[in-house]
Image (cartoon, rainbow, N blue to C red; front, side, top):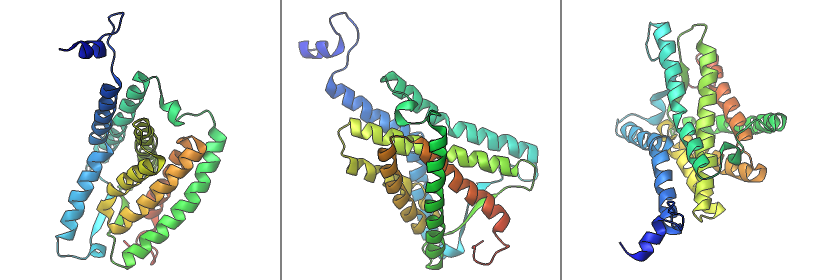
Length: 270
């Protein structure tokens, strides 16, 4: 080991130190590992799923994808247990991100994921949900009509007392996972690595679109646009929480609305 390498590893007091070059490598590995354990893996799964759809010799619009389905058909209590287990384990990467941020002197508060500005966050999130949610529904209907999207059935849960609470919980889980990791954490780390705002926005938006590719081309394109908008608003407000609120409301509307509307209104594919 050279003298320079020794200085990188131990400071004057004998404590472990990390050189700037090593620190950059650590951050790069950290980002890849977080994504591999969360939405990066979901993106790969979505690409594989979409490849299967394209090679099935059926049109996209004639195939259906279910977002929230039963995990134990005919056994409601076991189904509920599996639903709650899935929700909680899906949030483990968020806890990991909180731990990794804390090791560097940051926290989830650095990303604006806290309750310090609740009223403004809810107001902003509601306004964003109304605009983005409406536009997203219109894009989905147009893409489906053009044959560029699968038929999306957001929820197929048994008609039990816990159906709506679980759908709301899944919506909140999706929002926290996606906005904390893909919006807040990823852009924060990429900019620490020297990426420009434009490049980090592109990376975040394309990742968001890629793990929605299982829905089809429309799902990919719509979520890329949503990702660009969310990145812009995140930088403008300096808080991820309004976008968590917006995402939760959009998903609640999709899950609960589809549950009671699919098959009952002619304009909604099902």
